[in-house]
Length: 217
Image 1: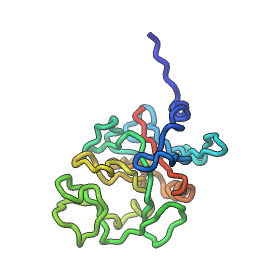
Image 2 (image 1 turned 90 degrees about the vertical axis):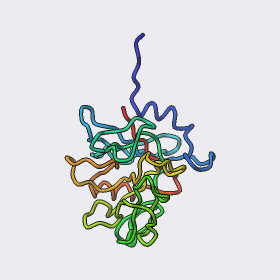
Image 3 (image 1 turned 45 degrees about the horizontal axis):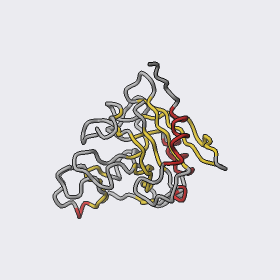
Image 4 (image 1 turned 135 degrees about the horizontal axis):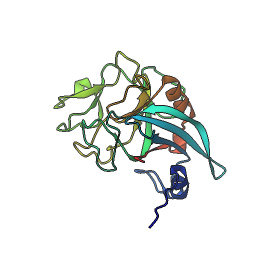
């Protein structure tokens, strides 16, 4: 029997009216979505397109934009594991935004990062996959510093993967952030140029309940 493959966006347009917030009210529907698609034949290169629903129609707002994902590509839905170097496939809420400056041009909830802020990636810690401060480190033996000496987290967004509920070992600290370059993969995040990250943050609006869909194929 011949199998028919539909373009991703066609599938999204069919299904998206039925997608509500993953952890929110069923009455709240997103009208902003980022679509992350791998580049065919590439392990970690991808394209990101921003879509906005206007007067009942989905329209491209930004992109497609060059991006990179995990060094080992995308994990199948439900197969992401801590330290596997893969970006989780699926559909997730976006936000809050974060960065090094006290303020940033965005309509998302925003939290400035300090040298004291860390994201725990120790799967044996009670604070696994949570943002805490160093003074609250407790039993955590490993973590991601949220204000670094480079610009990777100068501006970014939390991708709400494995956050509610948090399952130990299923992956942590999944963000959209600034890349090291188009030839350098992430450890599991989605990364773009600084200009494009700032464009996305300026476009996003928390009241539109933005989401991201990361697709294996």
